[in-house]
Image 1 (cartoon, rainbow, N blue to C red):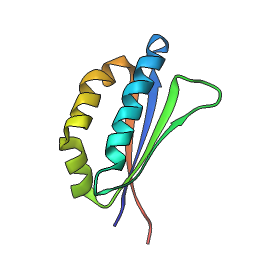
Image 2 (cartoon, one colour; image 1 turned 135 degrees about the vertical axis):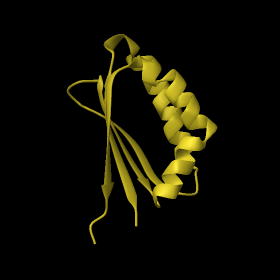
Image 3 (cartoon, rainbow, N blue to C red; image 1 turned 90 degrees about the horizontal axis):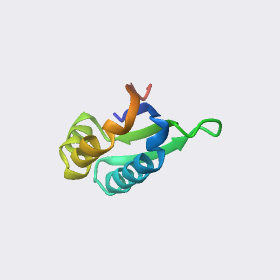
Image 4 (spheres, one colour; image 1 turned 60 degrees about the vertical axis):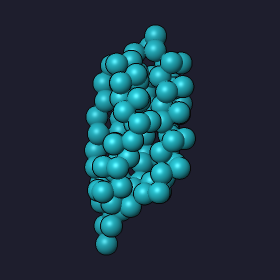
Length: 95
């Protein structure tokens, strides 16, 4: 069963460019992981500080492996401090 992660992000306005570089680097790395089926970085057309990540993994194990990888650890260490807020929501595909 697929695991879907939706991350609603609010970037501090002065950090938009720096954050976008880091999140796109993380997305590129994630897309090459065997258990990652989709990783999208979506930007609000009305507010460049409002971002949504849409990620699909094979299962919880694949997501846990994603979080253990160096690219994700680097993203958390360098990009998360640039944020005003970050909310994660997990979803499972309905049968």
